[in-house]
Length: 503
Ligand code: ADP
Ligand code: MG
Image 1: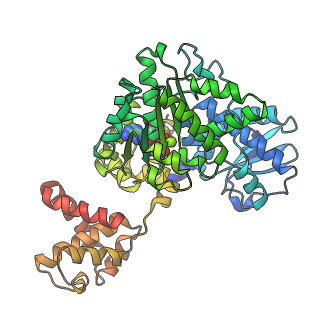
Image 2: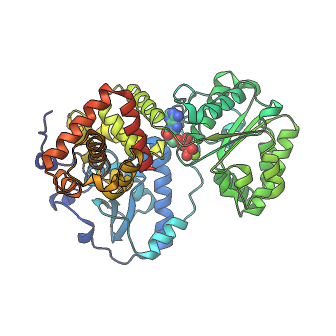
């Protein structure tokens, strides 16, 4: 397939699938054009929408859901038609063609009055009522494990109902190890090999969002199963699900069964424990389960966004016990680790991605591996869909929304100040006409960084550097790139500056 490579041509590519054929004849949509009628029965709708999202997530899997569907918002309902928003044209086309029918079917199952689902480009619905009730709507209880449940071929055990399914992709093998996560990785491996050993019980993993806590916990579960966990039952669940289970058990007067069930496992993993802050009864229940299991030599693995001592709001006695085993921190990723992760993911997907693109992504998306991975998935999907190679240009186009959010908004003034400081030169020489190497080179570095880190055009940058011509800026960029390849000490210097400016 050749779809042409200009922007205009690309925009003409018609959406591939249909939800409502009428919709596609209406041309482009913007959020401003979308009519948002008042919504009747908002709480029910919110609940229906939450269930639909829950089902989508369990049907397509976490990674796919996060890459494509998570940003969907319910924009409105008008009689028999529901409108759903996505933040970009590309996402809209993709979701329409790949999930449009499914979303429509799910709506019809939830609400037979719905006949059509419109998927449009638009921001999240600003209207307070629906947005709030959607945000507050409890996630539905998970659907009963179906034939397509990810544990699939694993033998049935008592813990199957208790444990959330483990994502088969989250193995130790697929976890890329680097300085920031090697300790946590080693601890998790150790627990999977010798569950219940005293120094590692409980294992407490903590770190920021998207740094691999859930991945490592699933890896522990998968490894235990792989090692023939016949004598070991493994339960993994989020703290949130733990709470819902607990509340459901109270409601159905089955707390004793629930407790027995929990205490029958050999390994209990609770993800995102910070969720239990302020949920005193659930904390209490968790504390008792925790003690019963640890006393019986069973393994506990817990994750949270902060260390036990920083989890204020958690009961002191629980906090103390959580810190008694091994506490392992997943540090923020380094540039090198992000590159390794991108390389590994691209190789796994069998897609060649230019190293310039990977470097660009690793520089831009620094805080969250999930987002890094989602961006790569989107690039790969886009390349396959339009049969176009991945380049820096397509990357900027396809990831426009994500990159915008990550723009650190470094200013040229800031760059000049930092670079001048670094090379011990007067800030005034950034704009002066002096041509001595000792000032000209740092000036070129600053121009290069201005091009890399800001969205300013070459002429705009030239203007900020003492009204220099845009060709001077261009020359500076080329010269610095060349020097970076030939002189590694210089390259390190520039990278360091960039990191300081980005942090
Ligand atoms: P957390 O639970 O800490 O928020 P996750 O474990 O959900 O983060 O990780 C987010 C995504 O990033 C997952 O898809 C995971 O596979 C991926 N990921 C995170 N760290 C790594 C790593 N070191 N190697 C490979 N993939 C990783
Ligand atoms: Mg997680």
